[in-house]
Length: 446
Image 1 (cartoon, one colour):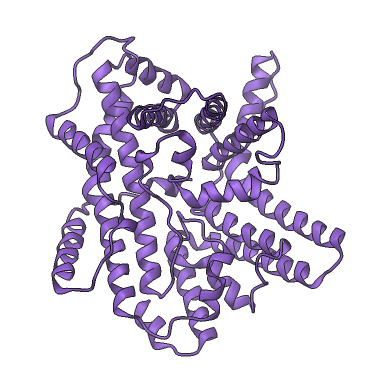
Image 2 (cartoon, rainbow, N blue to C red; image 1 turned 90 degrees about the vertical axis):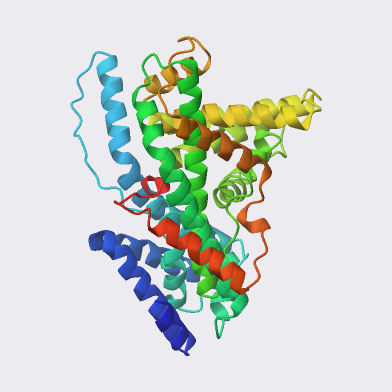
C-alpha cells in the first residue's frame, strides 16, 4: 500500500489508489458489504453537492433530512432491527399477548457505525457551510473508505481532513515516518502486550459473576476498564500511525481519560471524536446549555442515552449511556451549587469509581450479570476468594499506576534517531511475537 501510494505522482490517481486499496482491505472481511458502503458514500456525496448548489433554505434542509434519514435507516436496520423486534416481542409477552414477531439474525457490517458517522458529518458540515463539497467522487470516496480508521475510528470529519486531501504530501518525511512508526508500535504493544494479557482473566471473572466476592469483583471491574482503554486507544494509535505514514494527520481520540477530575472532563478525554461528534451534532442542536437548568440536564441525558445506543443494540449499552447521562447531570447540579469537592485527588477518585462501575454494565452480557458484579463490588457477597493469579493482580496494579502518572502517546515527542528506531523495532517485534491466534479489537463489535 505504502509503496504504491508514494510512487504515484498524480493526486487523483493517488486518491483512487487509496480508495481501491481501502475497499480491498474492507472486502477481506466480507466483500458482500462493500455495496452498503458504496451506497452510503453515494448518498452523501450527491446530497452534499445538491445542498451546496442550492440557496433555497427549505430545499437544503429537505436534502439534509433525506440524506440523514437514508443513512440512519441503513444503520438502524443492520444494527437495531433485531433488537427492537426482540424487545417488542418480550413486551408483548409480558403484557399477556403473543405477538410471535420474526427473529432476525442480521450480520452487523464491521465499522458501519464509524463510516456512517463520518459520511453524515460531511453532509451536515456542507449544509452548515463549515466545509465545501468534495472536489470529485474519487476525492470523497477516499475520505469515507480511508482504511486506517475505517472499522473502529477515530471518527474523522471531512472538515478535519479536507485541506489534506486537496494538497497531498509529495513525499514521506522523516518526521512523519518516525511519528507513524511510533504511534503504530505503541498501539500494537497496547493491544498485544497489555490488553490481550488481561483479557482471559477478565473474561473468566465476568463469567463467574454469580455470587462473586469483593476482591474478584473489583479485579474484574478494574481489569476490564484497563483492557478496554488499552485495546481501543491502541487501535486509535495504530490508525494515527498509519495516517502519518500516508502523510495525513488524524485527530486525537484519547487524552489520558483516567486522569479526569470530573465526569465532564472524562468525556473530553475518552473517545474524543465521538464525544465531540455528539456535542456538535446533537447536544448543541438540542439547545445545549443555553436553556433552563432542566433543559440542559434533559439534553445531557438524551445525548448520552443515544451515545449508549450507538454502541450497540442491547439494554446494557442503553443503561450505560443513561448512567453517564445521570453522572453528567448530577455533576452539573453539584457544580452549580458549589458542592464539588475541592481536592483534585478526591475528584479523580470519585470520577474513576463512577467510570469503572459503569464499565461493568457496559461489559456484562446482561443487566442481571452486571448487578451481580456491582453487588460484589459493594461487598454484598462477602470478601470472597481471589479467583485470579498474582501475575494478573500485579499487572492491574502496575497499569493503574501507569495510566494515572505516565504521559499518553500524544504527549511524547519522537525524534527520528537510531536509538528510537531500535527501541520501536524491538517493541513492535515483541508485540508481533505475541500473536498466536486471532484477537479482534473490542470496538469492532460496535
